[in-house]
Image (cartoon, rainbow, N blue to C red; front, side, top):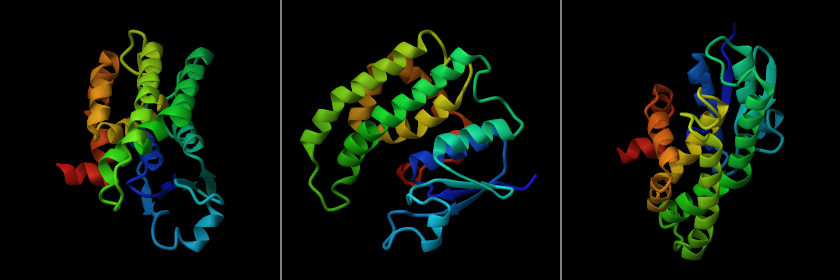
Length: 217
C-alpha cells in the first residue's frame, strides 16, 4: 500500500493530531512541511490541496483529503492496527461530542488565549494581554470540567480504550500545559491530570513532539 503523505507543520495542533493517529495505527508516512505563517504564506500550489489555506492536508494513493477530523477518521478506518473509534453508536457519538468540544471551546481557549498569550507574546514583540488570559480561565475551567464529567471513571476521555478523542485533545493540552495557568488548571482536575500523565507518556507523543517542547528540554 502506498505511503500516505501529510502536509503541514510540526508545530500545528491539528497536524499533530493526524500524526498521532498515524503513529498509533503503526502507519509509516511522510510529513511535508507547510508553514502557513511563513512570510508570503504557504506555497501557491498548496491551495490545490487545501483551498482555505489551513493545515493539515493529506494524500493516500491518489486520494486527497483535508480537515483533521476527516483525516484521522480515514486513517483509523483505512489502515490496520488498533481501532481508534468505538464500534457501538453511543461510543462513537461520545468521541464525536468530545471532538466538537475540543474544536469549539478548548482549542482557542487553551492554545491561543492562554499558552500563546502567556508564553509567546513577548517573543513576538507584544505585551502580554493579562485581561485576555483572565477572561480565558473560566472558559478553560468549563472545558476541563465538561471533559472530566464525560470521562466518569474511565481511563481515557471517551471510555476504557484510547480513541481519536484522546489524540485530538493531547496536542491542545501539550501547549496548554506549557503555561503555568494551564498546569494549575489541570492540577485541579484529578481525572484529567491522570489522563494527561498516561497520554504524555505514550511513544506516539514522544515521536510527534512540538519543536517548542523539544527546545524546552
